[in-house]
Length: 143
Ligand SMILES: [Zn+2]
Image 1: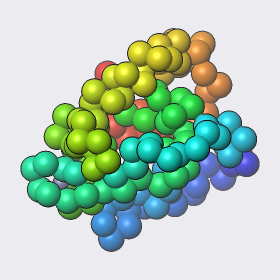
Image 2 (image 1 turned 30 degrees about the vertical axis):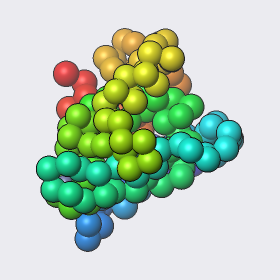
Image 3 (image 1 turned 90 degrees about the horizontal axis):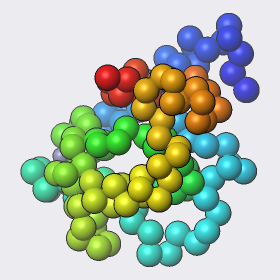
Image 4 (image 1 turned 90 degrees about the vertical axis):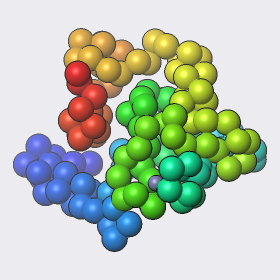
C-alpha cells in the first residue's frame, strides 16, 4: 500500500533505472488479479531485430498483461540492447517468430472494454491506480 504522502518517494524508487536501462520496478496487477493459467508456450522473450538483442519478460509482467493487455503502453517495449523503449513492430518473439505488435493487437481485441488510453475511458473502465498514471505519463500514452 502506497499512501498519498509516500507516493513521490515510491515513484522515484521504481522509476530508477538499472544498469541495463530498465526501470527498477514496473506496474503489475496485484498477485491475486494476475492471470493464473500455465505459462507453457506463452511468449516471454523477444528479439529486437535492429540490434539483435533478446529481452526477457518477468513472470509478473506476463501474468499482468495476459489479464489486462492494456496495462502497458500499446506499441512499445523495452530493449535491453538499446537501453530504451522500441516499437513493437521492431520486435519478434523468440518462441514463435511472430511480431510483438500483432500479438498485442490480438490480446487487445480480446478485451477491448479494458482499453485504458484516454482519461475518461481509464476512469470509467478500470480501477484508477497511480501506477497506470505513471505508465501513461512516462510513455506519452495520454496523447
Ligand atoms: Zn535493441
